[in-house]
Length: 274
Image (cartoon, rainbow, N blue to C red; front, side, top):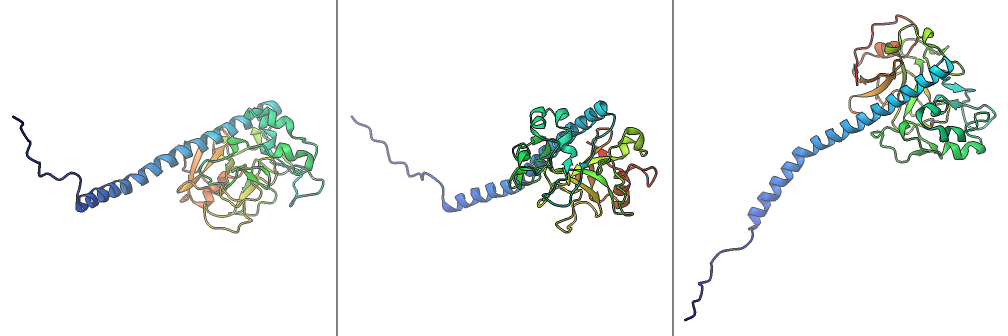
């Protein structure tokens, strides 16, 4: 005798209403999680940026130990391309201490940075000089390796910057004894990481700036300033090698004082070391 199963009157699958409910729940969960994921990614990028600056700090101190002074910010500054002035940057002179000896050996330091004979060397991309949060469309700027960190030549917030009041300056180098505010209270290098920045090339001696505005504010495109794409501030390298995150809310007078080597303009900046 053959037994036959009665057909099961049971639906397989989901109704449209049930599907819509599931899609809605998934969408809400994604909306809740996305900001957290983005925050974690930015924290990782900011840590990498800080690590870049720490390596730059080690290289600056390597130069200091070998030469007795921090590097000149720009040798034979010039306002534009062409001409016979070399306009070579601090970031080119510290390459041997940045574990970039091969890149440094390719540079001809006796001729201008934009001389055709330096074109191949200048096109090298030095990853330590690139902030992962900068949002660059290219690692090259006019065919030369980009740099998201600029030498601090002083400030124009409190008073004119002539002569230059910083440490990484034009045609002048400084020793520790010249930094009267103390190394930990003086910014040598800071982010200048928002495009467009035509001078943002590691070989270009115009890779310097003096601060005139608050951090990360809108400004004329030709102004080189401490700025970044990190939320709420920018990172800076102090003379003792520590990396500081300077908040956008920091008083401009405190920022100005930190960008000079002279003594006693204002109290130490209330920033937090990374």
